[in-house]
Length: 245
Length: 165
Image (cartoon, rainbow over all chains, first blue to last red; front, side, top):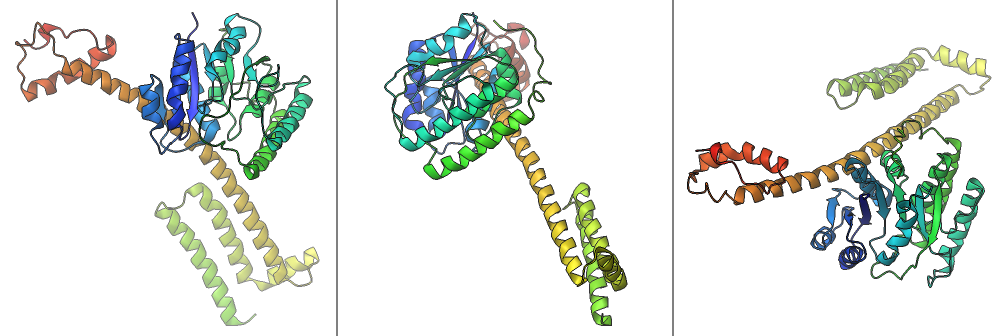
């Protein structure tokens, strides 16, 4: 039975993080849940711990990339076989865990599964501005990969042990999802998309305001470009132990 | 160039060099970063000691107004130093992130360990409870044993009676 860790980075998500953790345990009782409390000022850590999650509290705010990598480092240190990342704000439905985990648990030749909003028709809607950004990102990712990934910004993902070790070693900062896809592809890992439902955020605002999203867009594009320029360099220190399920 | 200005520029250059050395001596500036500043100070000293050198270099580069060459050098030095500083900051940022992550994980493991140790200490073994004197010195001496056992046996096992007869 593979050991599965669900990683939830959380910054000031006190109103919702408890429900998310409980919902995960309702749908899958065989997973461990790790909430990475990214220097929150509210009671995120207590609420998450009461719901049954293990909680790592970062003494200062690192941002989404640094917090997520904390989860991967934890998973690497404690020998987890599969790690799932999921947002704390409730837009990722824990009912889809089986779909995201499915290909990895079935031993299919895939290293990362992305829970995508657009693979099939789901009820998810987004603002025009964000959609434009996603379309541009998707186009660039398609250009680099040679095949389409419809939802490059989805933070609902499952990875196997090899990717856990890779991410523990290197993970992009700030707005990491599209860059992580390109990074994995350039290092020869296989990516699969499955359809998941996305819900409206239960509470809180998206951390990405219009002004910052332009900055992130430029930064992500630069990051992906840099990834293509140094392809393979990062893969060298990784030890392939043949632990793939 | 007037003698006073000559003296002032040399004095300033010397002061600058000694100030950098003093910073390193006091540990306020690391040796590796002081090298660049010492280089800047030496260049300043050389050019203020000999205005003819500046003229000669300006002539060699085809610069009409010699002091403008100083501005160019100054600007280039400033840019190189700034680039150097941002490289250093990037490296520091990576390290701070890594350390913060490890600190967070380590603190969690420490808290769990403490929790388990406390749980083990609060539950004295039932059969040996009246044999163990509740003296403060006694608990103090037993702590390492409890600690090791809690870590080894998940904190649930009872302590051996022979520990403290």
